[in-house]
Amino acid sequence: MNLRTGLLALVFSVIMIGSGILTVGAEPDHHHKPKFQDVELNEEQMKELKIRYEDLINQRKGIIEKYKEFGVLSEEDATKMQEYLDLYLEKLESDGFIPKWGERKHRHQ
Image (cartoon, rainbow, N blue to C red; front, side, top):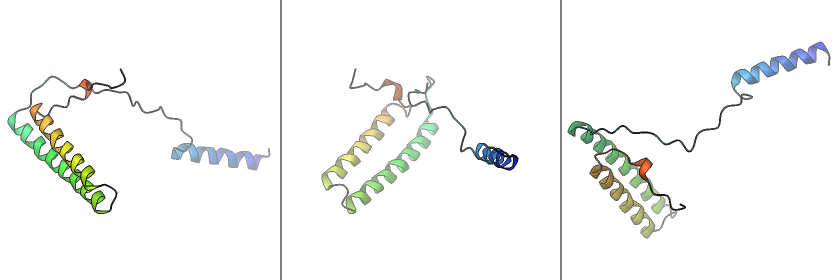
């Protein structure tokens, strides 16, 4: 390899590493379970979270409606999905808007 080729290879490598193309990162931890602190939210905090969750669920229901409109989902499936979202909000509210993610029961145990 001559000097010019070696220099080009070095410059190319520096550019690629600098841009992140050749970096090797750690794999994301898909099994990480967040640890929620044992706290109770006050009324104002729960009210704020309820508003945000209602907005989120209404957006998701709007997306479900579009899928139904486009023929991707049947009327029955769309209704079931929307009912599930309503149950999800009720469950969150009954739990004081503290997620219970680590307490899910796994089917394959």
